[in-house]
Amino acid sequence: MNNTLDYIEDYFCNRLSLEEKEAFESRCATEEAFASEVAFYVATRAALKEQVHANKRKDFEGLYEELSKRKGPGTILVTLWPYIGAVAACVILFFGWLVFMQKPSPDVYADQYIRENMETLSVNMGTSQDSFQLGIAAYNKRDYEVSEKIFKSLALQKDNRAEAVKYLGFVYLITGKYETAVLEFDTLSGMKNLYANPGYFYKALALLKTGKAEDVAIAKELLKTVKEQKRPGYKEAQEWKLN
Image (tube, rainbow, N blue to C red; front, side, top):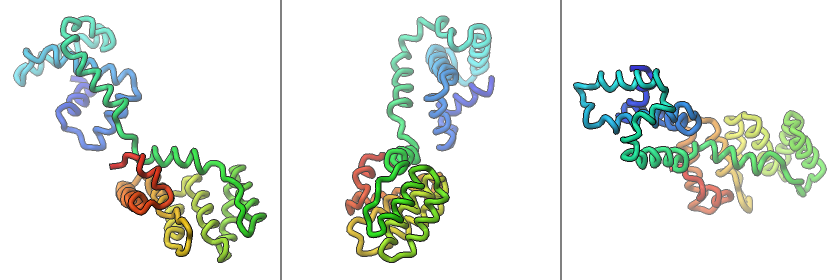
C-alpha cells in the first residue's frame, strides 16, 4: 500500500496526532489532487465495506493500487459508480465540513486585524503633534526603522508615553518582532489612568502571532478578560472563535 493511502487511513482510523489531523484537513482544503485521493478512498472503502474485513485487507490494498495506476483517482469513480450514490452524501458532508466549518488558525484572526487596522495609521492629534506626525508618516511609508526611533524617543516623555509605546508595539508587530511587541504591549497594559487601555488586546494579538502553543493559551485568557471587562477590542474578541 502506498504511503498516501496509509496516511489517509491513519486519519480515518484516528491514528494521527492533533497537529497531524490539522495538517491533513488543511491539505484537503488546499490541494485538489490530495482531496481527490481522499474522496477516492472514502468511495472505495464504502463500496467494498461488505467484502473488506481485517483478513481481506490485502485485497483492498491491491484493488486500490491497481485501479489507481490504471485509471487514477480522478477517473476511478466511474468504475465504482454503482456504489457512489450510497456514499456521495457522506463525501459531500465531509468536504463541506472541511471547507466551511473549519475554524481558522488563531493567527488568521490576528493577521486580518493587523491588515485592516495597523498597516496605515491615522494622524495623531496629541500634544507633540509634529513629532508624532513624523513617526506616523515614516510608519505609513513603511520606513519602520525611522518610526521606531521616533516612537522610542517619544516613549521617554511622560505625557506621550502611552501613545508612543502603543505605536512602538505596532512597529514590532508589523515587522514580525512579535516577542518584542509583546513586551511593549505588556508595558502598555500596565499603565494606569488611561481612559481606555487597549494593551490586553494588542498583547493578545502579538501572542497569537508567535505561533507558540503556550502563547496562544495566554492570548485566549487575555481575550477572555477583554470580553468580560469590555476593554478595547472586545467586539473583535467576541467574534473570534478561538475555543
